[in-house]
Image 1 (cartoon, rainbow, N blue to C red):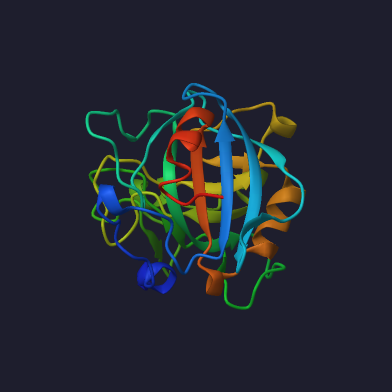
Image 2: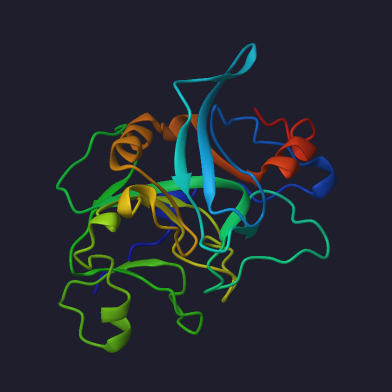
Length: 244
C-alpha cells in the first residue's frame, strides 16, 4: 500500500496571519476571485487576476460557475474567520468562503495541458479521497496498489465514472496538515452538471472549457489563491486584505 502525503502538493502553504494583520500573501501573483450575490446564492462570477509592479490586473474575461446548493459559509483557509459566525460543516451543501491556496490537479486523462510545476495525478481505481469525519484519512488523498476491498475504500474512490469529476483542481479548504474532522472535505473546482443547471455539494464548478483554461493558467510559482466571497463581504475586506 502506498500513501501520498499532502505535503507533495501543499508543503509551501503558510499558516493564516492574525486577523488584524491579514492580507493576501505577498508572494501570491495569481488570484482567482469568485463573487456571489449573497451567502445564499449558488451562482458565482469568476475572474482571474495577476499581480505586477502596478498591482492587480484582470487577465481575460470573467465567466460563470456554480456553488453549493445552499450557498456559501465561512471556510477554513488562509483568512481569519470572524468571531461568532457559522462555519463550514460536512454535508451542509455550502461552498467554503474565504481565501484558499490551490493544490494539485486530478483527472481521468493520461495527461492535461498545465504548467510543468503543477502536480497532476491520473486517477485510477486505487485513488481515494476520504469524506468520513471519523476516518483517520479524513479530507486526505490516498493511493492504494490493490482494488478497493472495504466499504470505506470503495466509498472513497475518486473514479466513479462521473464526467463531472473527470477533471478537478484542489481548493485547500480544511487542508493537511491542519485538518479539523467534520469541517468539510473534498472541495475542488470541477466540471459543472447540466450545463450549469445544477448546484453542488460545496465545490465550485464551471464549464469543461473554462476549467481546462483555468488549470492551464495556474502557475504554482506564482502561488495562486482562490478568493470566494459574497459581494458585500468582498467590498468590506477588499482594501484591508489587499484583494484585486
